Image (cartoon, rainbow, N blue to C red; front, side):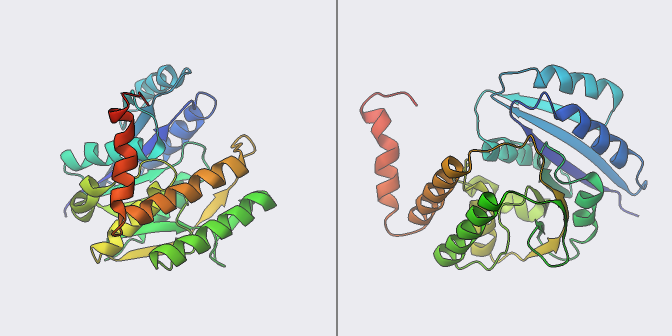
Length: 260
């Protein structure tokens, strides 16, 4: 029987208060699963300013299925993409990513792994009637999420209920085909990723999940919503005849010798 190798990417930006518990639970859970599967966890630290790296190193001492890389650039999407490349290079079979705050438990994440079937990818869907939400987001965040999802459907003709759930698993052979085409690494990263799967005619399954909103997952909803909206508009322009506008905008700092 072929041993399946599964890589789990956990992006971490200033996660000193949460990363230890997440690694303890994920590390212990996946370490004790069946012998026909090998699970590896990669923490991708991205431009952090706290003790995240130090804490991750302590966790690695206790578990041989955890590793990390430390990037000097920021952005969750950039961190996840580099994690993808790490596991693709090592010839893993399945590659997924999950948020560092334990909103998705290792049990729930493993449900995605076990149900990918013949699909190229499987993504958590918090809005399914079959999902179990232990603690919901605030009303404002739920409203912002629904507006964002509606805009994604209108702009990209994708029928996903939940593009932003931070729990997704991909077959590495298909992921390798599109990873070099990922353009957006900030707020519209997930939409960019799923849209590339659509453009390559790769099947993606939305799957009910178990999820909890963490009290300390504070987010400026209005500010974040504006950035997410501008991100998907930018992405839509990139995949349109007007992509020259984005390229011209991106070249301005170089022309004016302005550093980002």
